Image (cartoon, rainbow, N blue to C red; front, side):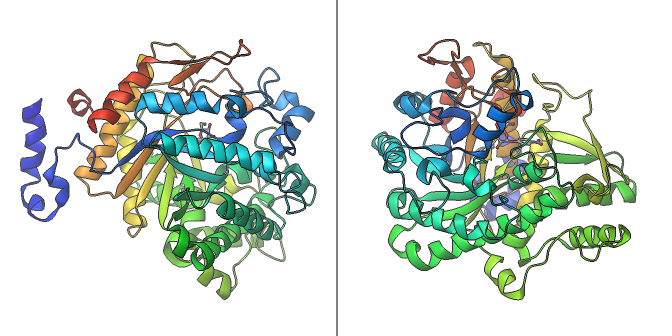
Length: 495
Ligand code: PNW
């Protein structure tokens, strides 16, 4: 095997004269690479109405509509991390994590969404967590918004209302003022392509508002403006004293074309632009939506007899504000699907606008869920797509992980992480992708949104039948701890 690894180096011969990547073997992480694990507030904290926390759209939806969840599961208690965060930090320490990616619950800080009430108990909670992380040499990577909007802001329409960008800006200022002295890694939003669906479909994402093909684009438009405003605020008022970095977490599957016919290759490009480029192109390329997205939504809107496009337009001033509004690109990816060209789906809808039909190749290895096929080579391809489309930005992989039914000896998860991290390392060391960090999803078994507690992503088991919510490391936790300690992935995953 060692021979195999040095062969890679020889093949790279010429490039090695130029690239520092070649100073290490393909299975080694670059020096300073940030390895860790990820969670989000609603999925782990519980304490949904304690110490002054306001209601979020997920609290509201799963209380009003338990049928949108699984077996009535909701985040009322979850992993009880609001009380047990010290155990989470202990788990991270055992893991040898250098970073912990978690999110701040907006309604725990601002119960009504605005500056009317600033909840000191919520600020104390995150201060305690951040301080304990730093005492253990773990750097916080903080998501400002992982889907738990204050319900009070949903009453005024939520993200489709453009004023939300200003409410988000005011919330961000509270975060910088209270935590920015110690938090050096910020991302504004987690996977907006997923949460804007809350304005196009019912029964899934909160707030379950079915304005299909309309609400999702209005929400998209506000979210991009909100992100850019927060970036500019940081630049103008905080960067010089706080010296942090700020980005946005975007996500996509990889899409493999059904065959290499021209129309299916074009469909592959379209779906990636609709799923990832919708957010990434304005921020990381030129301040505006991808041309193919603009053209298709405009054309469909016209064909539907509408007086305006369902996708709003940015002003020139907004484009300037949005263009380049990030220090790094945070990226989530789990799996690969197949895509072909088709006019498919409800009219109007995002799906129809994409002009694609997408499916799971059931011959690819399964995890504990149909949607999550184990396709490690797709991970390398999607990392390379991101790194060539948005070449000026370091990439931080903020989510990647595997579903099973909760066994402690989780060999399927070990195999997934081994293979996916090996493909990521090939992208870094052989293809030259500038990936700077990786946080595994997830530190803990937690509330998998509409799928409840049945779906398990954790490298730590959580006993949801016990009020203690006891954390127990799975086999994958010690597997990752070995990788994190050695800063390398075992060579057997490179065969
Ligand atoms: C992410 N897809 O969502 C979220 O950020 C996490 O909160 C969540 O628990 C995790 O992935 C696992 O599902 C996803 O369409 C949404 O492939 C959509 C997809 C993947 C992940």
